[in-house]
Image (cartoon, rainbow, N blue to C red; front, side, top):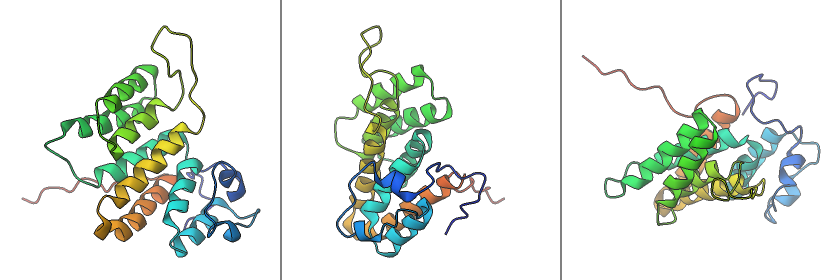
Length: 200
């Protein structure tokens, strides 16, 4: 599925075991893990067995934080816009601004945008994943409170799984499509097709 010799590969773990040590695999996935298996080879196995939740949890931790947040945003945008809830789009825009320029100002903007979304939604957790990427959880000028290192991965995995499950009739297709988005990002892509040129 992917060329592990690809110089653009974003996954830095040498083995799948390094990634799996960060979260509990399901009972179905545990026997499939070979300690020396490459990350993308294990991901292939998870997808082949339709263990999508494990695959999403795995990718959320295998990708660097910026790429993981981008993946989450891509999946959330796949749901389409909601004119009745403009705060959802603003949350994704703030998260993406942090991806492009991961500085403290943009991290705090992602916090504000995520906090403005009052429902549990992939857009909210995408924005919070950006905020939880580093820095402090405390207000500016307050004593520093570092976020746990896995907070971004948890937010991203939750957002992607939620986005896939929002419409049960589309869940299978979305699971596969969202994992393909993640794989494209892992291999140095954007997971988004280029804008179509208007026909004249």
